[in-house]
Image 1 (cartoon, rainbow over the protein chains, first blue to last red):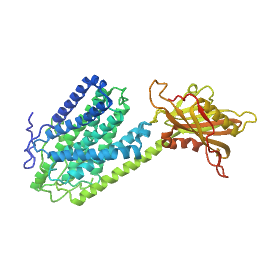
Image 2: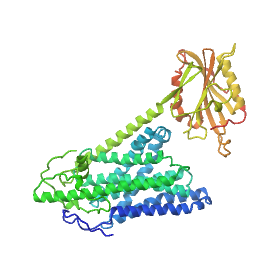
Image 3: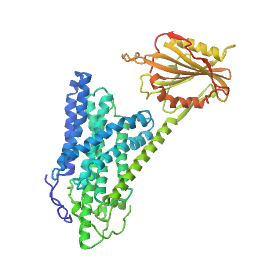
Image 4: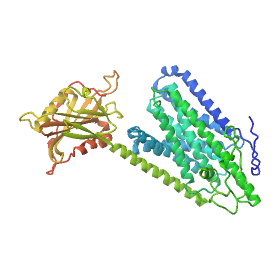
Length: 334
Length: 238
């Protein structure tokens, strides 16, 4: 379905180029991941015939596949104004390398998370948020900030999400690598589900941070805005891990299909919320530009006036072309 | 709520891009947030490590603390000779679960602490494989009661019972023997020798509750060479 709904108050140039629907792309991605899971579950019997080395190699290949699927579909999302492949790959690899470098020293040496996080429900929740979530959010932030944040190719809010998800996929890839290596290979059926669930949670949490980074790239933000984004992303990652681990299904004996369903549901909710936020932010930018041109002052539009979430189009707002409002009014600080 | 949502969507009243120093300020704020969170996590980890429960033995004659996250095993699992209890760390990375065992029995007439330690070593050398006493020292527990701490090692085969073919494990043990109100108490701390350091914090909960310390006159080595060796069948684990 081609998107044609462009808000009438968009800034000049906001109508072109047009994008495929955000949620439709996510749905495509989820379908691709489900196909990935189904294929490997059909091949589960083959795994028994493979040796340890072959299972490890196959597991490592499986660890990369969900991330690559994500990257391809997110790249497709941005095909109207595609980001340079080298930048997307660069952010992905930076996220991957940072995660590889930090995983052992942070999770094993400094925090020894295996020894204490699962003891109580509160230590599991807080540990997942403060260690797992914060470290992955910091890696995503660092990768995007260092590789692409100041690059002219980062020219719209959606790019923040695309690059942050790429970095998050780098973290997910290492998480999957560690899983394969720790288990001396991987069960094709359960392993494929586990990898997809991990990929979903890292990618969706990274998309939230990407939204905040997209905002901070183009607008003055209050001091606590980006830290709030990091905290929110870490909290989502931690809650994601907590829910799945506490559901008792995060093991070889549990119902991993339930993990997959929970993962898909949470991803749709988070990605849907991010899509809505990006669209609203672009609308607000366009409105401020119009007000600026007419000499009026900015005022927040009531949330109730927003359009429905589902199937809402993303609007490209080339922010660099938007003239600044010269007289800031109320609410300059958070 | 609405104002928070508005700020989330449109953090600035203008479309003005941020200045370079604002980006630096943002980086700094993010770094501080992450470091603070990690610092907080260290505190939570410490809280979990130090969380403990108390077990009472012989009608409250002895109260001993053990890590709260360790799991208590029933009396039947601790063997017919044991009058105390056993807790194990099911989260041990080794196939041999780290454990704390406390046993007690009345002290025999004319039996001294040193004799009890000798008997204990003799018994272990017949029960476990490759038993070797490494060191023993006089200490004090419970604010002044004399105690003997014996450090030993042996080989266990925890996977054997499960029918698996895993490697045997070298176990390091530390027995704390002392007499209180005519009862001989033996507090035994055991772990895979490779994991001993990782368990040190948990074992410290026990030794701290016993107030284990060197005697004021200084630690006296009771024996520093191997006291006993044994070649019995390996002790089962898990």
